[in-house]
Length: 63
Image (cartoon, helix red, strand yellow):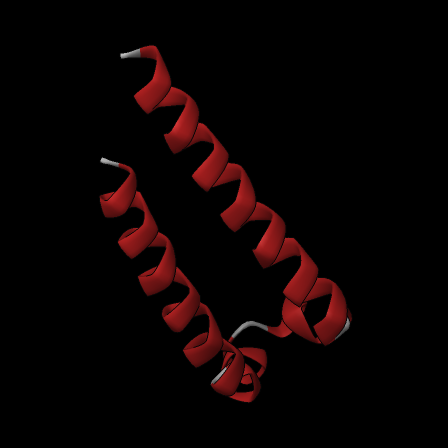
């Protein structure tokens, strides 16, 4: 199960970096993103990713 979560995490990181490449496109589409500095956006997305992985890991330990 942990291997599956590792692959999901890896895929998440790949998608995340693709998102960072497309950030200028997203900033045009969603004006709110213009107010958030890129560094903070990066930190917010990383923290969401870490929380999701932690929740998945705690789930697998309980079952």
